[in-house]
Amino acid sequence: MEHVPLGTTSLKVSRVGLGTVELGLPYEIGLPDPPEDAECIRLLRAAHDAGITFIDTAAAYGRSEQLVGRAFAGVADKPVIATKVGLKVGKEDAGPLKGDDLSRHLEASVAASLKALAVERLDLLQIHSVDEGDFSDELLESMSSLQERGLVRYWGGSTYGEVAPFTVLGYPELFRTLQVAYNLLDRRMGERVLPRCSEVGVGRILRSVFLKGVLSDRVHHLPDHLDRLRDVALEAGKIAIGLGISLPELALRFAVFSVHADVTIFGTASVKEVVANLQTVADGPLPDDALDALDGLQITNATLLNPSTWGF
Image (cartoon, rainbow, N blue to C red; front, side, top):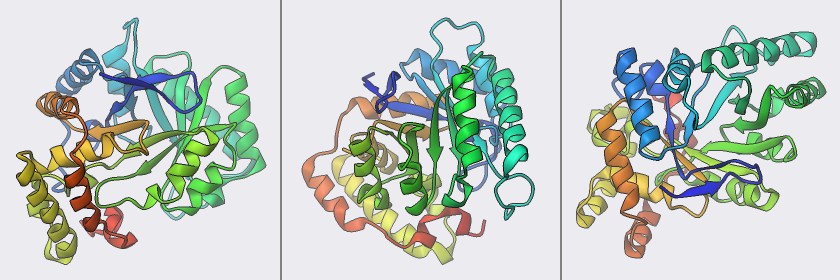
């Protein structure tokens, strides 16, 4: 497994990371239930044994943090564990916390993540779904304080859209990584955001490489109101067939070997898929003619690309 620097941090990580939302919550098309605890822990350890040294989790991912903590408790060469903290509490449309409420929330969230992960310092703490309205002097001061006290090694942001990433990138001395959705259908972040990351030295973490299962066999389960998304994904599947590979293999190789990637996260609840995905990465970049063919399949409709709007 190739290891790469994560931006200008001192972290060197596998260029492929493991996402853990499927271990803690029903996810993907069809919302399958997560595996039992023992199977999740076996998967995490198998991924690490195979060379994956970047694990992405979040306080919002059900029992994911606890499972990661149990999987690597007592392990001398722990992977880099990136977790997340949200800034909104209560209703989905609640505004960002401010002042002392914000400081107390960050303190409590960091303490809870440290306990769940069984570590003394968080390697990378990402502000979950941070947007431009979340930024305040209190936020930046609290982030700096937690870092200075040795509780958080590095901060990052996990974002949607384009405005929020550029707000994050305005503070590259504090936000050292940026996590965004990027896949062969959704390349919007490759136009301006990810190139800007490179310019300011912010590490680039790509997620949603399978677009919540659209770029897999689950594409056949998409409802009719997403027929445009299904049809384009099936066109990509034809290109995969021409190469003698599967649609998810095509999607993974596209993202991992993108010029915009430092770390590319894939999520799975199957040890078998971990092994298969790593073998796929070992096959290397896609041929140029396949990349040229895929260029015609990009989608720019933000609603169509946002799983939260799909209605199931």
